Length: 229
Image (cartoon, rainbow, N blue to C red):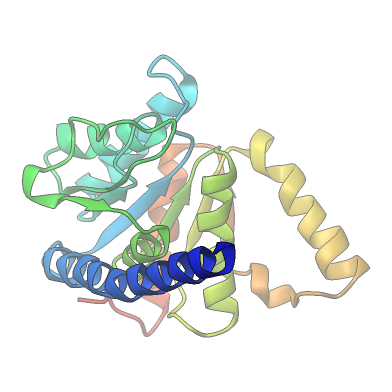
């Protein structure tokens, strides 16, 4: 009897997995249709737990405003914290403000600064991450947790393996990021030779909003790439 029940449950799982393909496909189609119209954008990542009175929240807001004033839109994960700051800065500056929302324990709602026609909801992390990479001209990465690190290293991996076109990755906050960068250089590169020196060429470490825009402009001015729209 137990064997039959286990077999039945296994068949139900396989059936649900098969039908999930259509939901996944729907998320891709909806994402592609909406985001293909937004124009050149820069994604801003960082902790959902950062409070509005924290210096990093205010810095992310300032960076987003400058990005918008310089002709780019802003994409975030749509939640609170640094994501909210990014959307708020873009919104206040009158630019494109996109939110790629997903239901997570510390992100219970989308923030109010996303353009109403540019708020997308995802159930699948991997679909959401495709949208970040496909429709961004650069990543601005503020201090954050595992999710922020996941987005950062996914982008680096895809660039390293030539799965996507190169784009600038800007880490904001020397105090937060310098230990990680030092470890990458001394351990991954020099100690074990698990990466190449040029794998770090696109990573920039800054502390102020004024340093972000010249990096974006310099990259696209000196490369043969153009925004992917």
